[in-house]
Image 1 (cartoon, helix red, strand yellow):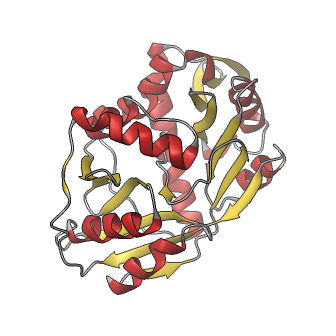
Image 2 (tube, one colour):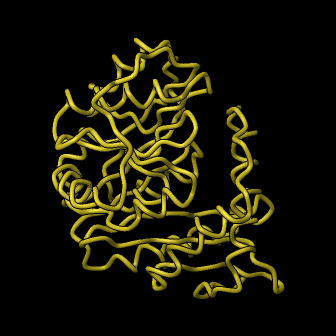
Length: 281
């Protein structure tokens, strides 16, 4: 097994590893299947962290084949693990441990750390050993019934100053152009003027942040109304996000203890009211 820096020629192979690994995880956890990502979106998912943070991007190679990958990003002094995947047949052989070590080392000197973890017991154990605080999560799923929020409007690049101000208030660091990357991946930026913003794709809330709980709840209701009959999903609901519970219940969503967790360490602000992005934390 060779652990080496990721190169641009590895992006497609790393994406394929993520598809196989996440499909295997969903089967083992009894989770509903997610629609397959297009190769174009997959390249963006893996390729953007490689472009912005090459020092945090690594692959595991065995017999000339990519069997694992990790990407980590640092934004304004806050480190986050964007991706850590290993093919099922290569798991429990040390590849994940070594990839995580390299990605975590990229955050040396960071003042804050964020990891979003699946329910896989090996992943939970590995992240807990980093010394980060574990916050168990719920997911809300179902077909939402919600009234539109008139104050919400479509966002654009001109709203990045608002997103950055909100991000710094709730997580200690701005996403910056990562918001635009989420839009390129099919997300829609919506704004509650002067109060907060969210990114939605289909019926799924991909990111939500606001200056206060009331604004966050209003944003969430508006996002659920935008689902337009599609299956909705609201992930990464920790005990700090009590504001999210009532909008989800009012919309008829089921709360599911999926066994995942948010791991936090150092200075990441209050991390509330906030629903993080899986790719950009």
